Image (cartoon, rainbow, N blue to C red; front, side, top):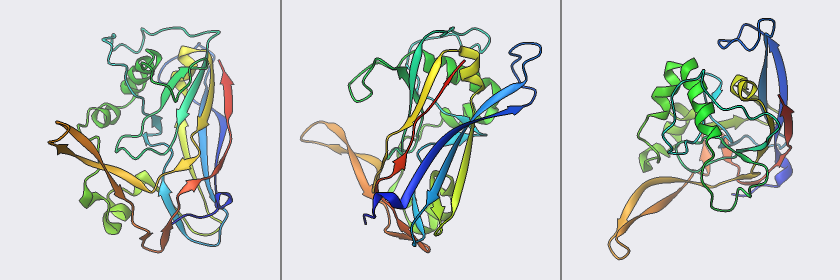
Length: 240
């Protein structure tokens, strides 16, 4: 099922809150930045689709480089005067994490995951026990039994957005880790929503390897129709 792209918009904005952060930035600095992601249904239909980002206690998740680095949130790099892209987007994989890359790198080309992602992951792990439990979860793919309407509405409702006509949905992400590392960051979303997710890989005897299995999402979940294809979005930048 494909609907016109103007039916859905996903809008990014930065908001600041005055609070006492877990990590002291300076003695008098209590302003914490948050990224707001607003999903908006501009159509006359009730729609559902994969989220462009998921969180643990309002903290973003990050891919790791695989490099052995100290898991100490007080010891991290300083990225002042460097510019980065923060890539968000609806992922057909079970784990949908952010990736931070230098703005000189083409995200569509094969590349190694930059160390800054490890620094960010370490900082957020120290803020939440649930964060570490989530990222250490072995599951990387859905199963076929996960992608049935009743389960999507219950067990996996936080991985999807459900909007009636004219409704909006707000997700909020704490950016304290970015403020600690410093630098300039441009957040953007790959503006495409898939019709499928990857379920448990199947062994291919001919190729002697596991192959990805695409499982189509249900066209209807409760009262909500599947929305797929492009949508309107924007970029937002912040410098620390």
